[in-house]
Image (cartoon, rainbow, N blue to C red; front, side, top):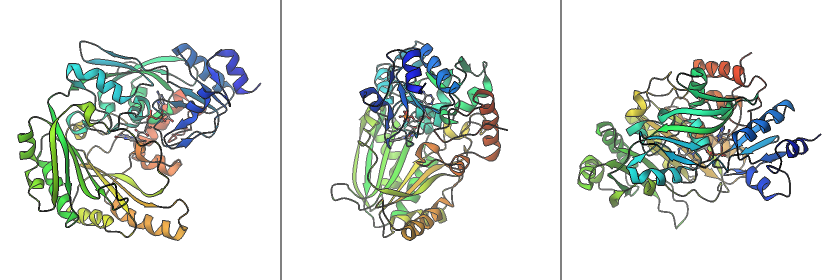
Length: 439
Ligand SMILES: Cc1cc2nc3c(=O)[nH]c(=O)nc-3n(C[C@H](O)[C@H](O)[C@H](O)COP(=O)(O)OP(=O)(O)OC[C@H]3O[C@@H](n4cnc5c(N)ncnc54)[C@H](O)[C@@H]3O)c2cc1C
């Protein structure tokens, strides 16, 4: 019996195949359209468990869809689409319980009336599932750490179809692993976070011309080093790319306080002669979140990302040189440090906690660029990435053992493999940055 036929019997009216609109919705993510054998859109945890148990018994791969902004479309097997798991419950104690398919924009909207927020990403439509399990780097990362640092509990369906409540006391190793180990350990149907104060924000953008890009990066580094944890920002070096998109260094910034206070914190940046515009005003966390582009742009990105332990003047020189390359190259520096760095490297699976920034560098070329050109560009990006450790999987659009290993120090990777062997020895949750079970 095919997987789809089996699922149509075991989870009636929740299983979908080719020709069904739910099938197409479930197999489509930001990076493209996958090729699963079946999509199940459950309404209850029991239905999730039933579908998982059936697919696992048949030896099929199982993938999960939460917000659908993943970078790795599935290749076969079953997709569990959590589109019906979007509830958001805010408790008086600031504990927020959300379904595994909720979106961060909706969570920000639900928390705003109480002046609360959860550290998440920068984009409204991204799902709670993929972003949280991968770590979650966003607007409140220096103020409150990663999304996983705010996580208190998950409800997780294992490969055996068991429903577990996982927290610091119950299955602590598994709780450690889901905080950064991605979707390797089961289907998370419910997340509980501790929300934090996120009211009284002020933020916006500062734009610069390209006369001295290195000076902008140095001033940004110094501002962020001297600034309070509440000061969060990222610096994008946008190449000349399309006439309608402004190019040059672009600062996105926010803090708690007044506009005058923010201007004082940013003074070394604002006094640079290359500043072309400043736009700062009171904002909410929801205002800061952006809409995602409609899908992956039709280009090839050649580069990668990594955690920068120390943004030295030498590193800044090499990073600035990326921007001057002939081929348009996009560079993003996301400020870390603050609360992010006060979490112990072994408290969660995200271990590169000493970093003061995350660096993303990508040359943009046509999909059919010659291999020699791609290799030359890769070498250029690698020159900047040489100043980094590890990689952030949420921004790594390729599968492969070397990619997954690059995300974790060796001891963390081996610990993840041991947890994986306990909850998914058959590696059915493998359509991700895969952690193979320990032997
Ligand atoms: C436009 C855009 C902006 C982004 N911005 C940020 C950002 O600011 N900060 C940041 O940290 N990341 C960011 N990312 C990366 C993002 O966190 C990852 O791509 C993430 O996987 C997307 O999560 P999702 O739930 O939307 O995607 P999905 O495609 O639904 O899921 C991705 C993968 O996560 C796993 N997964 C998802 N939900 C569950 C679940 N409930 N249980 C088990 N496994 C699950 C599965 O392996 C799945 O294949 C961005 C990505 C895009 C496309």
